Structures are given as structure tokens and as C-alpha cells.
Image (cartoon, rainbow, N blue to C red; front, side, top):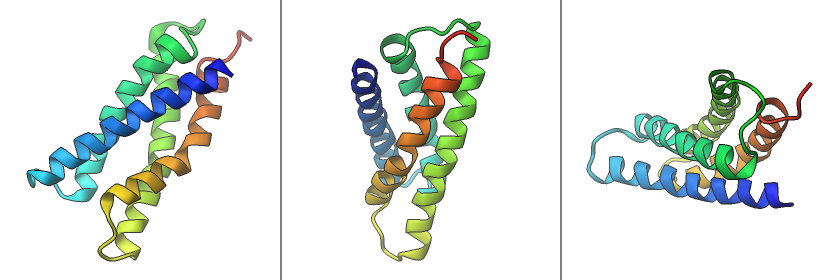
Length: 126
């Protein structure tokens, strides 16, 4: 149960980073909503990696480089799910809020990322 609580905490912090970076980039017209979301997701992924590695799962039995590569692989797959849902909302539903699209995209990727991180990245020794 502790793992899930810390995972949700990491997700909440990552979500705040994601929305915060997106807001800054959109508020000051630095990027369009699609490009800004790539930067926002990458920022959130770095943040959640640090929290998940430190508190949720702990360091794995793998070298940090292998662990990071596995985390990145799961994170990229999760980010693609997230980004596709986000983009579909903005493309299909004209005038849809990018912030609401972040909620839907993030929610759609949460279960996938937990299973990937807990089993593939930080799972038990073989």
C-alpha cells in the first residue's frame, strides 16, 4: 500500500510540474500547445523518476544506467499514451482546454506506468 501512496504522490508532483511547465510555455507564448507539452512531459518524467527511485520503489538491483534506461523506456511509452490522448482532445474537440486534456492524458497513462515501473524497472531480482 505504501508503494501505491508514494507512486500517487510522485504522480501528483509530476502532474503539477507538467501543468506548471505547460502553463508557463503557453502563457508567455513561447511554444504551441503540442510542442509545449513535449517539454512539460519531459520535465515531469525527470521529477517523477527522482521521487519514484528515492521513495516509491527504492534503487533497483540494476546499475543506474540500466535502471534509468528501463525507466525511460516505460516513461516514453507512457508519455506516448499520454500525448496521444492529449493531442486527440485538442484536435478532435476544437477549443478544448489544454489543461483538461492534460488531466485526461495523464489519467490514461497512470496504470500503465505503475505496472511498468513496478515490474520492469524496479521489480524483484530475477
